[in-house]
Amino acid sequence: MKNIAKIDFTGEVVFNTSRSSGAGGQNVNKVETKVELRFDINASTLLDETEKEKIREKLKNQINQEDELLVVCQESRSQLKNKELALKKFKELLISALTVPKKRKPTKPTLEKIEKRLKTKKVNAEKKAMRTKPMHD
Image 1 (cartoon, helix red, strand yellow):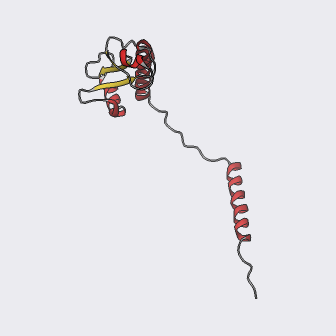
Image 2 (cartoon, helix red, strand yellow):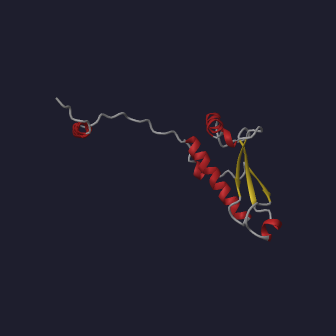
Image 3 (tube, one colour):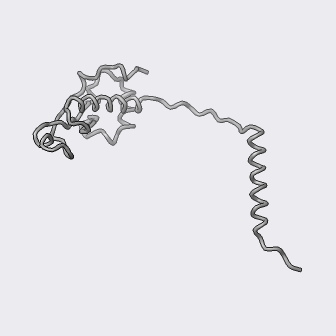
């Protein structure tokens, strides 16, 4: 697997800017600080077909009908900072989509753990047995 964090995607992503919403005073009304990163999955030359399929499968909620991965960032008041944050989010998304989780190795409980579990079961059973009303003859 490739090291996605070190790949330069700047040639394959397109940035669109617009006016951000929320707090910011007059700056929000004047400056286009909201950044939308678009990555065309089909046109990518940096990824092979299996990687593209994994991305489509795992990030399907963030992919539009044109098969573009969308990342929106409007956290900062600076357009440059938002571009950097969007690119960082984009790389993190790709890393999370392309990493294969380790296969779990089933293990057996140790003898000590088994004994501890049985002891707590016995204590709980005695506790509950004490709650019952005594029988009268």
